[in-house]
Image 1 (cartoon, rainbow, N blue to C red):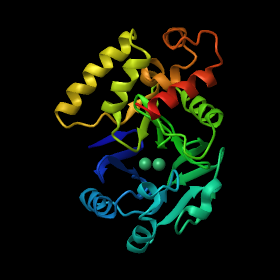
Image 2: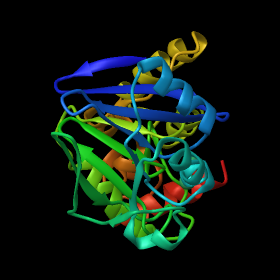
Image 3: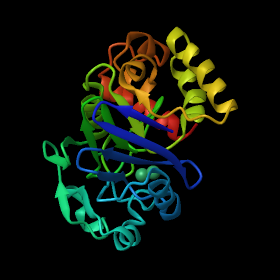
Image 4: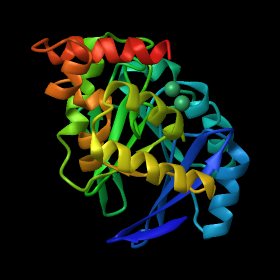
Length: 258
Ligand code: ZN
Ligand code: FE
């Protein structure tokens, strides 16, 4: 699946059992970045198919399905590797460590770094006009498990992503949407927008089509983890008037046990 988006092109493909790989291409300079390195063969095949030469890897966090093939792909392509400063010691072959507010260039394209720690302590996202590559921080109708950070840190990270402009496409790293939908409806059962979306997700998955990328306006309206401050969600959980971060923690704990 490829699409032209102004000056850049994003190519998305499947890796491992449920990861997505993404190539971002800037045609003026010919530069191409790979978001994370879940699996070598499909990444190299995607580059071949597009006729693009990999110049950069942009890592979101240190987990094996995100940075595990850095060294091999760097050896094969001679690319440079940018990754999260907060966990730079765990990113193989890293060249440049970046954190919140830093800017990473791909030819004429500039991506701004957001620190979205929580799933891992140093997790980062790459945001450029209209597109955000978010790794395992935010998922379609879900969010990453809080492995290393605190619930408050993760909630703060989700607030940064929620604040991205309307229409921003969200490229999450896994196809977890059908499972997330089954959980979401237990938290927010009266949400009409969620019900419509779940029907659409069913149609897409029946045809084997991806539900990624998603879009931030749709996530704000339907993702239970982003709706921890919503009155209907709080009422359903018997947490009316509670702090949103506490409601978020309750929802995250329920999902861990779902
Ligand atoms: Zn992960
Ligand atoms: Fe992952």
